[in-house]
Image 1 (cartoon, rainbow, N blue to C red):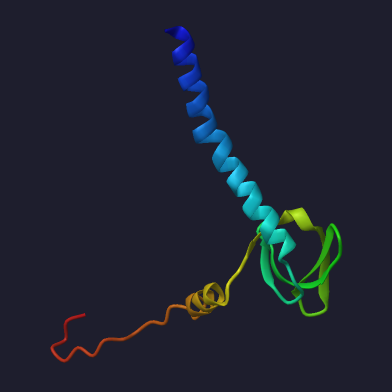
Image 2: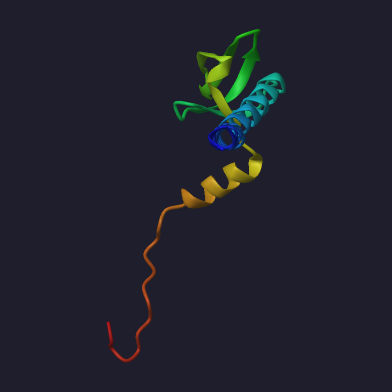
Length: 107
């Protein structure tokens, strides 16, 4: 009976911990293989930039005009889509104060 419980626990451990980690690693490896110049990416340190050049294990990331960082390819965590950038641009507009026209004097 205790052998069955041990086998079930090992199966649950494999299903809930090892399989999801392997899936994440495969997705990350596929992302790294598909990187091209011009892609907008984010690193695990939270740095956003455009890929200027891709070597075997090194990526040159342009973070500002004429400013490039040499980073490890494995430090890239995600590719940023154009939709995400558009959402960020809208948020940066700043909150403008809107004055309400109050005819009855209530403020």
